[in-house]
Image (cartoon, rainbow over all chains, first blue to last red; front, side, top):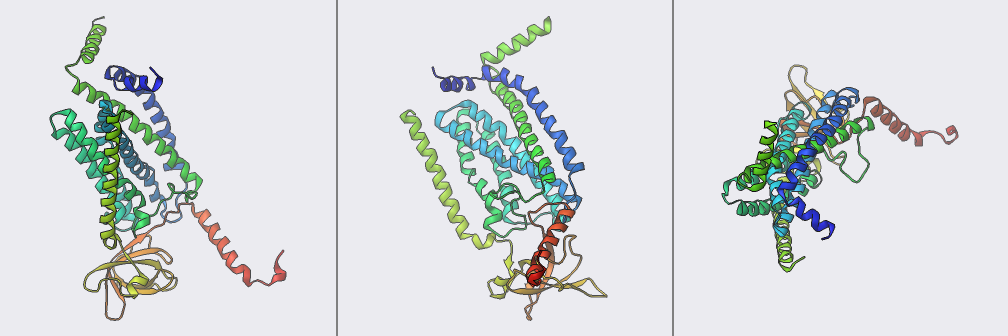
Amino acid sequence: MNIIAKWYYRLGAPNWFYPLAGKMIPWVAAIFVALLIPGLYMGLVTAPADYQQGESFRIMYVHVPAAWLSMFVYAAMAIAAVVALVWRVRMAEIMIISSAPIGASFAFIALITGSLWGKPMWGAWWVWDARLTSELILFFIYLGIFALYNAIEDKQTAGKAMSILTLVGVINLPIIHYSVVWWNTLHQAATVSKFDTPSIHIDMLIPLLLMAAAFQFLYLLLLLMKMRANLLEQDLASGWVKKIVFERQKNLKK
Amino acid sequence: MSPLRKKRMYLVMLLLTAVSVATFLIIQAFNQNMMFFYSTTEVKSGAAPTDRDFRIGGLVVNGTVKRADDSLLVSFDLTDSQTPVTVQYTGILPDLFREGQGIIAKGQLNGNGVFVAEEVLAKHDENYMPPEVADSIQKAQMAQTEMPAMPANHKN
């Protein structure tokens, strides 16, 4: 058996994934905190105030990473959806359904912090411009994926339906990204994620990148925890869960 | 890949293509409605609606902001660097409102070609820098524009 096939079968096996994810969780949490603390400190304290927006621009250190992650999580789900549909890997479906509430939370945070930022700078909590509307649609797609999976009793059918819906929704990602290029919007154009050099001062950029990296590890952390929980819930009656429970009980009695 | 998986892969790609084409067509059909504002040139050329409110966007022209002494009435010119349009507004302007700033106003044109706004929003650009850097960039730009006016023998 070659290496790829070996990993393929291992990653598909819950009894192998469950303890591995459990071992990874404290490490991922440690990296998250190690990135978050300097990111927040530099962003909120040492970064200089903006020439136009003053201190208000600091909300970007939550808003921008949350918005990036809301799109990154969806891209990861779309790849998992292809894997789930073509190779019929159950673990990919578990990954999608575990990611959906996390991605929805990131989109929600981006929308709320954007609103709090918009009122003092633009003069409006909300406008129906292309960027804001397409991000709101992303939030609703996340909720739709979550609802669809939970509405169908048979999890094999539910997984397939959810994967197809995830793929249909992926078209929204380029629309969100290019909305500020294709149409007139109130939202600003891209500062960092463009082919040109970022139009942000280096002292402001470093904390932003630290926060973005911290949010990536936050996603990984939440994903591992949620996947473990979902696997346990679905496989309650199966052998590998019984084995884990049995071993836990043995350890408690000692 | 086994034939079955290959077939499923083709189906996935077919799905993605179909969704892309459908979305492209929808966007094409609604393109004008997805514009948040009209430029000043579009407004002057009559592309904007006359029977309902619309938004106009542009930069505030330097030296055109006039405030009334006894009310909150303010008037200023917006431009897209080609056509200026005069805007009148009664109310409190957003903090970012200043000369040279990108502004979006919502309202209608009156008979004299003046845009009467009922809402003014400030648009900020994608540049972030400390005030000192902004100052030095402005100074450098001013020095550059003054350069050609200087006599050749002043160069050193």
